[in-house]
Amino acid sequence: MSETLPARETVQRPMPGTGLWGFSAGVILVVGVMVVPFAITAIFMSYSAPDAADYVRMAFASVAGATIAIITVLGLLIHRIVRRSPLGTIAWFAFIAVLIGSWQLAGISSRVSSLLTTLGIPA
Image 1 (spheres, rainbow, N blue to C red):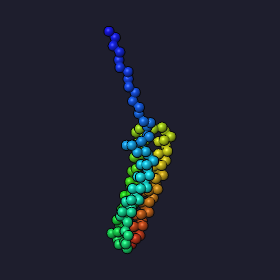
Image 2 (cartoon, one colour; image 1 turned 45 degrees about the vertical axis):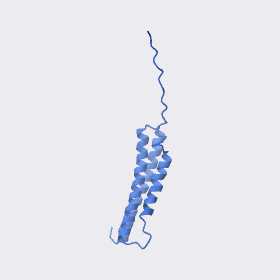
Image 3 (cartoon, one colour; image 1 turned 135 degrees about the vertical axis):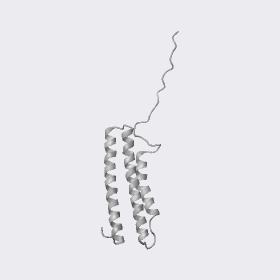
Image 4 (tube, rainbow, N blue to C red; image 1 turned 90 degrees about the vertical axis):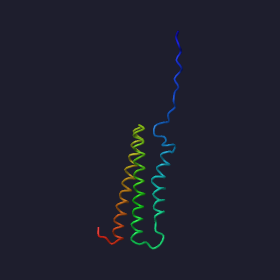
């Protein structure tokens, strides 16, 4: 009268933090921090003599690219935390997020002051 229970199937889970929707973190980092911001800036660049509207459009495109870069690194950091990656990996991504975030925020500040100077508005 004893029934044998079926053996448990073991599910192979990937290591935490090894991939995000099928893409590696390196690919997401390069695309989100370099490729997309450069593409946005190149699309909205003025290729003739720029006027005030062109300067504003280019500044907003640069700020949008910087915002995408910041969101990318913060998203990768949050992904590592939620997936409970090793502490060293989380620390490394936190360092990258602080580095890129501060670099992009300084770039946004520079673009804003450059825009105000170009438009002749005192800061």
